Amino acid sequence: MNSKLVEFKENRILRAFRRRRGFSVTALVALALVVVFFLSFVIGRYQIPPFEGLKVLLSRVFPLSQTWPDIYETVMLEIRLPRILAAVLIGAGLAVSGASFQGLFRNPLVSPDILGVAAGAGFGAALGIIVWGGNPVVIQITAFIFSLLAVAISYAVSKVVRSNPTLTLILSGMAIAALFTALLSFMKYIADPFDELPTIVFWMMGSLSSIGMSDIFIVAPPILAGIVILMLIRWRLNVLAMGEEEALSLGVDTKKMQMLIVVCATLVTAAAVSISGVIGWVGLVIPHIGRMLVGPSHEKLLTISVLLGAVYLLAIDTITRTAFPVELPIGILTAIIGVPFFIYLLNRGRRGWL
Amino acid sequence: MKLTVQNAEYFYDEARTAGFSDINFTLENGEFMCILGPNGCGKTTLLKSINRLIKLSRGSVEIDGRNVADIPRPEIAQAIGYVPQLHQPAFPFTVLEVVLMGRSPHLAPFSSPKHHDVTIADEAIDTMGITPLRDKPYTQLSGGERQLVVFARVLAQKPSLILLDEPTSHLDFSNQVRLLKTVEQLAATGILIIMTSHFPDHAFMVSSKVALMKKGRIIDIGTPDDTITEANLKEVYDMKVKIISINSEISRKICLPVGDRLLSDKENLKI
Image 1 (cartoon, rainbow over the protein chains, first blue to last red):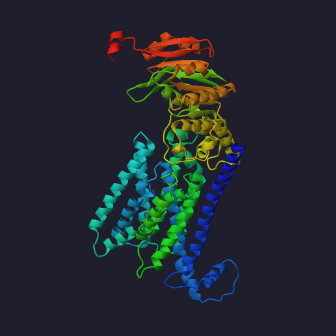
Image 2: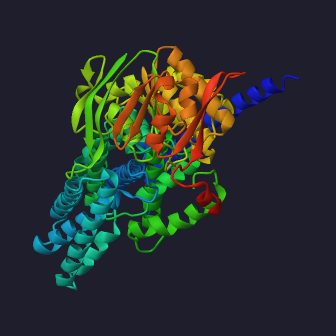
Image 3: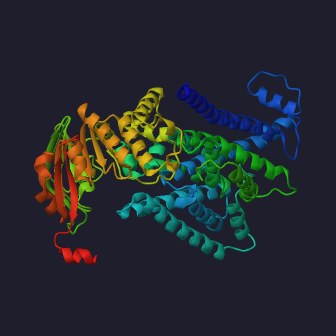
């Protein structure tokens, strides 16, 4: 009897379930972000009672009379807040840039560094340390400028070659990244081994420990602008991921789109790297975890990448400053903690897109 | 819609290796043109020049009197749909997600498909009879199923001209006929169709016009009966082809490749 109807109903239920599942996973990650966000304020070398901590935060919005010592405010709002904001911005930015680049280049092995951002920033930072004496503001500026420069050169080189535009961009990016890595090695070679060299090495490992509120005010606008634009074009990324020709035939101006994505992702990554140093792994792997959770469509993928990237980097940063007697560079822990977790997910989440 | 191709010419490189040249034809509402010709004769290249996937070196393609070279990309895609030859995409989007991409030219650059677009995509999926595949990953489908999905996508695109690049190449017998029937129905609703094919039989079955191509030129164009002749096919494919009229049941002509005329019977035996 009506087996077709039953099947149809089952399909509908299944569909509704899947849709809701994608939604609920996203909601869950958003909730996790809120929780980790709060915990990061109260956990640390100086423990703050959670309830008191909550009151301090709420007092920023609601008029509460102060029942807590001043030091709580100092620790939470002056010391931890900039770091927390930086982790959220950088994590979200790197993850969403990685997801966009993977879509643009139709290659799940691509990271936001593919066009030479990190190598350029590394060289710029080394230049700042050696030539201009290592003033943190100077390092940020030189890192930012050279990371943009590296990508600009990659992009310009790829335009000279008149064949497969996407492939050429990857290849020229790899070449320019190799060039800047070599230049960075040269800078290390001539650096003072007792003073400058360790500074360069530590910078390359990434850290959020010295970020202040003034840094946030400078990097937040480019990072947020980049994330917002990438989020706006996230559905088009699906079309673009089908290949240049098909995207063209579906009315997408692929050249403009490619440029827009490269500019946004580069701005985000360069701004992030310039205040935090090189933080690997997030931009490459968060999008994969996102795909395991919500599937490959960039419409959901970019949303979940923003949330996952933020919660991941924030959690790792909180661990780096609490779990060890000496604070570890965050670039080390993103991978050491991330790899086992990733392998666990790989094993568990086989759903046909790996 | 009226499509006019005038003196169209395309060179691959500075050495002027011609993809095709001297192409002239006009098509109007409801016409169904089949382009036949051997591998490498320029069929696909010609098809791609119509919706400006490649730019003509000389000549023009006009839709309703407007040169496609001057029409913005989304507008071209609203008017012209394109079904490419098969390939493997990098990401396993679901069938619905792939079909939804057909709505792309109708959406503003910063927007995503709405409920209305999903409805149109679902209708297209239904028309192609692939509703059970709706939520499956596109990459896990067979070549034939994928072909039907891409066809559903072009339906969701709602163009007035559809370019089909060997649409039946991965389909089994029954799906070939099913697809051709669908295309024929579309043509009947007034949509212009241009299809490249390796099967003269398909041209007899569904097309109203046939263009025979060889080495980048159209050597004959006209109704299937006038164009697909033994002499023409011999010239195009360098091979003897027999055309037989079957009057009982199907009343249609069919083509039989007979073999290389240059070989004598003795040599044939040796092989």
